[in-house]
Length: 298
Image (cartoon, rainbow, N blue to C red; front, side):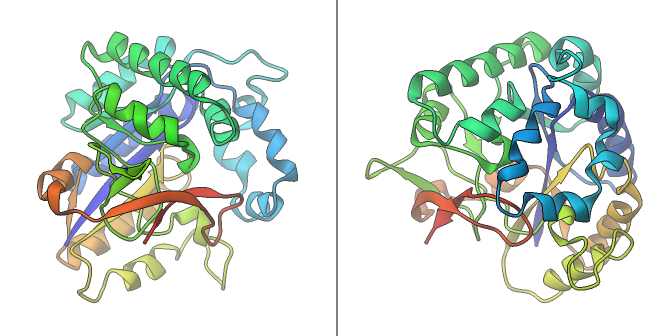
């Protein structure tokens, strides 16, 4: 079975510190992966608005946000100006690419996208996506091929824009298997490779699961043959820092089970996209994560 590793990079600190640590860990495991970068301002501190979202306080208390992100990052965009990630950490982004890993677009402004895209119109969405693509091209001197939405937040305009902006495939959603989105009743040209496994931060603190043993329930899910592929999302700010030891155990466990750890590009290359099912993308919920997410509807 192939397990595609999708790495969301949300912050300046995650780009500068988490990405290099993950590159080393992945190289040690001979694993492929896709790094998806936030390319504009780091406004992490503005996420305080989510305090009123159902389930948010519970998640924060379980996963030690201050410990993982650091005080300075949590002040960006409020008491401290939000630094420009693409301008200040382009070298770390290019180093991941130069190490042989796939790179793509996560977003321009992570907090703005995650908090507002589900309610905003096509013009707002297009501006955010074009800013991200323009900054990606400035950093990497090439157009992006893969998009993975911040916080698994999308709207129909964003799905349409992925076609217009030339994305070849995307991983914006939660679901069970690769599919083609239905947009206004037609099949999109951009297949979706949804996140199929729970993230570490969704599991920690539930049913006796800790940061030390959180790899065990994930390995149990992938122990028996069944699905031909999975997509696992990790974060540079979590698995690239405090959770790096448990990620190392998880990668080793997957290799011991005989799975191939690959990039989204490699996984997409194995698919007959014309044969993929067409599914709507609708708001849904995922255990352990607050708020609604863009989910595959079967």
